[in-house]
Amino acid sequence: MLVQLRQYKHEEVQFDDNRTTGESQTEDTVNPDAEDYFGADMDDLDVETWDTVEYEGDPIERRSVTIDGVAAVSVQHESAGDEDPGLPGRPIQIRTGGGTEILEQAEIVEVQDETPKET
Image (tube, rainbow, N blue to C red):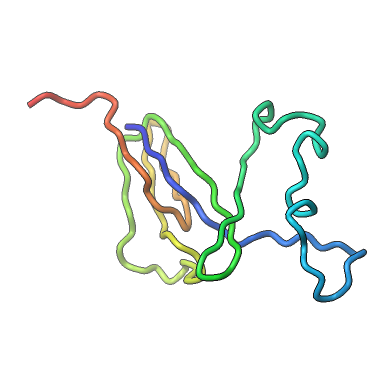
């Protein structure tokens, strides 16, 4: 199966010794243009990209995750107590032929069976 998820984490704040207390970070300082920063376009780099979005009035980070070759998906319905209530999502377990992976603070967007069985 092909599984698409969204995963969330708290925004990573970059501290700048040149800022004064209470001065906010601007979009340009937090997210500089990739070509200016890396000397290459983001599409040309093999990196994890997190976008800043707003959740309940606070900035958080979100990324899209697509995993191919999934055998099973499990969503934990009972709270294990280690979830962050300040973020959306919950732990999702993905089982592939190569093992098991747990994505914390994730939500399922779509699951597609690439080889559906005819009945």
